[in-house]
Image 1 (tube, rainbow, N blue to C red):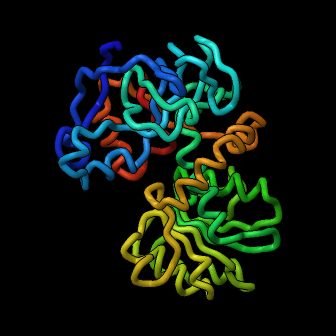
Image 2 (tube, rainbow, N blue to C red):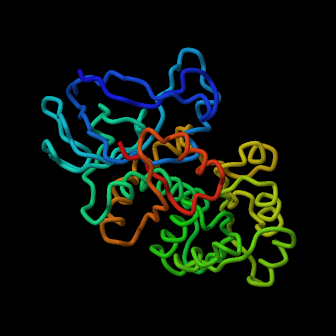
Image 3 (tube, rainbow, N blue to C red):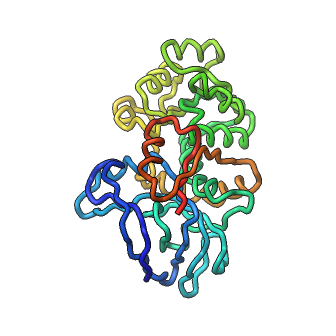
Length: 313
């Protein structure tokens, strides 16, 4: 057992309630490892999920993905990618309490870190990439189709564009601000500015029609334009407009949905292999010291971080 530092939500709420406290990190048992965290990935789920926490869930440990080095290994334990030794560099997802200096986690959620990824890149790889893969799964997109991605310059949007490119033969039109159009182009998409008249602009770009739509932003505009352009509602998927999914009969994917969670767990190794091959990259905009989580979360919640953010213990 060691005493470390980590961020928690002591009561229901967003990032404004988060506190940096001392936490107890147990020694790893069979099937567990302890990771000395070098970078904690940051995602909107980090500040959204504690808002609905129930009393028995408090305090909520913050952070779902990390990269670091192995500090301790439980008896007779290997990680998801194979044998492991003290000091090995690893990625862990999905975990609870990544905003910390160290964490003990199930070894089945830990993978060897590709050498070509920095710790901040590795710590931000899997949540966004697995979410994008889940969206592709439910829409069944395939070569020869034209698709629309709302929020294409964001973390999940960028991963979608790269995974489309890996599939091959998919034309991706991606909404973004004018200032982020080059990000969409960089990853193989065709940018279109969101805002009034979006549906008409997409129709002009794709008179042959749009086969599927991927909503990474959750705005009414994204849903309405998707409904206007895509005939089959089963091929419209959102990660952020839960209320519209139920009302309009479109697909919703989320880590809390058992089917999504099982699929996302199943693709972690493949996504890491893509990253190791340089096919899947993680644009990191900025890193912050662990103690400055509030400042980092303010930037993340602004909706315009310019890339992924990481906390560095």
